[in-house]
Length: 279
Image (cartoon, rainbow, N blue to C red; front, side, top):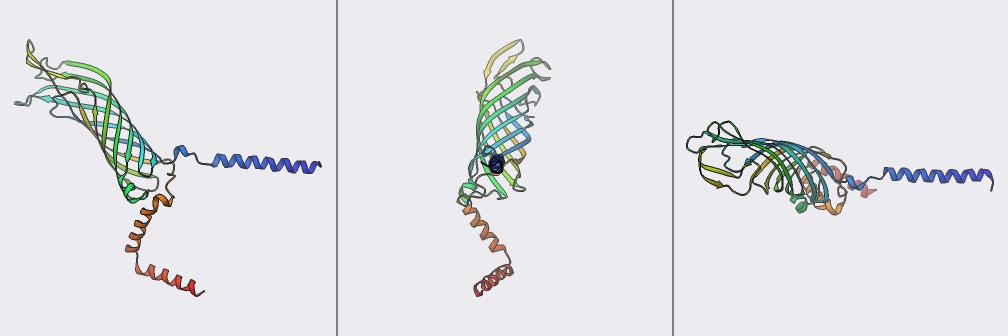
């Protein structure tokens, strides 16, 4: 085989391998399709044993979501913050006891977008409500103190920490700013399977030297979180350009544009059609 022909064959093989390798590198990974990350900040409101007031505090964290279908996404949430509350005497409103804690919860679940199911998948729909359901765990480190009018005024009552399973559900509403970013608000209630988020599960009747009765409280604590976040889409959804999922949304959008469009634009289109027919 002539040496020139050998060089040509080697060069063609080399170029073919380089081209194939480059194509593989440029091929988008399906792992990140439809993945969104959302930093969140907000407030929580605690409802537990004998908490009468000052039950609002802060929460912060983040959520990661991946689209599973055109209307359903898997969801991972990590939130943390502080909870607090005060118990007062009903007749005098004097402070009996109060608590404060640090908490963090890790939840996995799903978000469901009913409009995308009913009207068709369409990422540019400005407002999009959704429903959230999730399960996970919560960690808390809690201190409770007697108030000025408690059994032992201004002293530490309990210091406890623990991990417990938790269930959460709520609603959200997103507003798309552009094709990759939206602002959203969420309101989610959580029910931990523990009665110790506020550091105690009983209260006493009597006086410090003469406790007449130990009273059990309701078995669970609960809290609600209202937060706002900004979502960033890491990679486009694989359903974004598929007519199978976009037909309903396309028809609705087309109808809206036709009804709100000017008559001049429609006349211009009709004139162009007539000219093309004459030709």
